[in-house]
Length: 114
Length: 110
Image 1 (cartoon, each protein chain N blue to C red):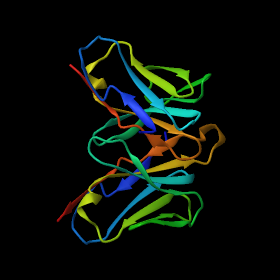
Image 2: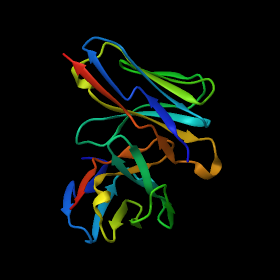
Image 3: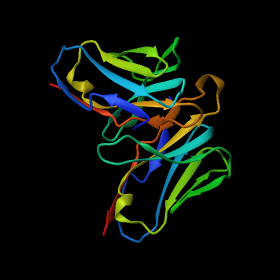
């Protein structure tokens, strides 16, 4: 099946630092989504991207849909302790039979030291 | 109130028992999904349903079955639980490209 390579697997940063993580795929996606999961909770949608090259922000979060449609990036600026959690990328294939199914990366565990 | 709810939130069961996990949504979405989450493996799709009469297997459906009782309800069953089905289980719904997740059920099979 399709695979998404998400990196890094984990990050330990100081409060106030900026964070970058990314996902790459061997397949073309027509939608990229970024989720955050906190302990004991389900993933929560942060940002959705629908067009190659698209750059979208949500507060201190910025995500980009790669030009090749095979990658996406998430940046968090000026991190704070409540940014702690697991961040997942998810892609939706550009294929009629697979519409509305998502492929997930394995997640980036973010720890922020106050 | 939460848009996607799951019951129970935690469950411990013994090998060989049949159990059912339930999911309800108030978002009015047609599409519903069941995922399993294991440490280091991310989210893997078990089953999905695009409407009440439509049920499809995901990538890891063996050992599981589902029932779409209504647009708002999608349940997951383990007919005979085994220890390697110990995991976090999430239900999700979708009305477009985005999926919205429930709070999860932590299942332990001893």
